[in-house]
Length: 117
Image (cartoon, rainbow, N blue to C red; front, side, top):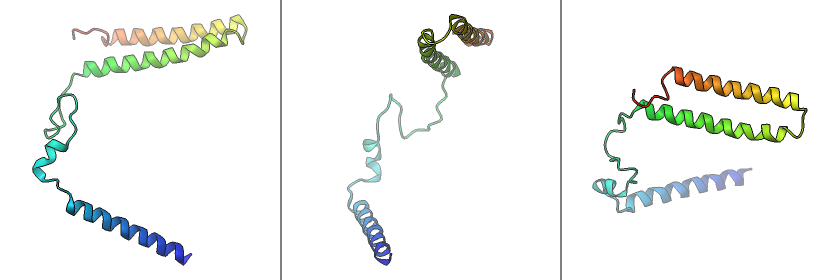
């Protein structure tokens, strides 16, 4: 038990010493920070991250994700057709399609599908 404790302590001390030496010996300067930062989509990484964006793009993304998940849920309904009675399959499919149509009506009613807001 004591041997495990000593080995763990030695590993922690050695790893800390190596990290301290690497940060001291590194050639990075404060003015090289911009050159080493990642470049993503034309945004300046040294500026403020609070850039305003259109909420409409966010809503369109959410609508896409919702319908994408719904398509993934439709596939098991297709395989369910072979396993259960036609009447049970029709009820499940009808209920699912009604839920999709209610969601689409709600999005239409809230003007989420209107791009010219």
